[in-house]
Image (tube, rainbow, N blue to C red):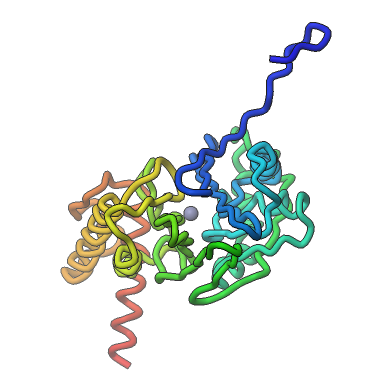
Length: 295
Ligand SMILES: [Zn+2]
């Protein structure tokens, strides 16, 4: 440890850990969110940017400490604040760096980002209130609908839309040569996946089925939050969401009103906001289907 006039200077350590060939993951304490970096001959891609300008600057510092080359591309796995509010810091560090996302993610962030910021402003006890308030929202500029390839020279990063689930624009990033999948918040390890009012629970299991098809038992899966998992974990989480969907359909079929369904149903998870939202979003979708069927 170097010393200068009695001051101990501690070398800054990066949060990033190499989990597969030139694939690094940093798991940040705030929101327990994962940020992934993928290196190739022609650059470095960062998937997700954490939850504020200040948090994004820490990601940039950690990448600098990693010293594996300048960032050439940024990807937002979906629109939520904890994955996108750090965009501004990446743009400060690398002017004009392209930010890839699903078209829906860009639309939602543009439409709802300020409202997300307001939620922090309305929580006086939140320790991150000031840094979120000081964050300028930067909207992804390289949007797509189905797939997009990021060419890193000796390897490709595939960005794929497998369908709606956690949001209407979750994308999965695949590093095929390393058998790694970055699964966005379609999969979560440290908590049950968040089902919000912008989620599509009825479609979520089919989205995960498509993702599962592209995986082997050895695939390393980087969830949006928490520790790394595998195909078996994704399969089990898919089945839990499918059970929730089955129950929503069953209760709706019995004519149980939405406001009673959460308490009357039997769920694979503890009943919290996720289940209430699943009922609400599920009933909405079923009602739309019926109306559609009736012309
Ligand atoms: Zn999310």
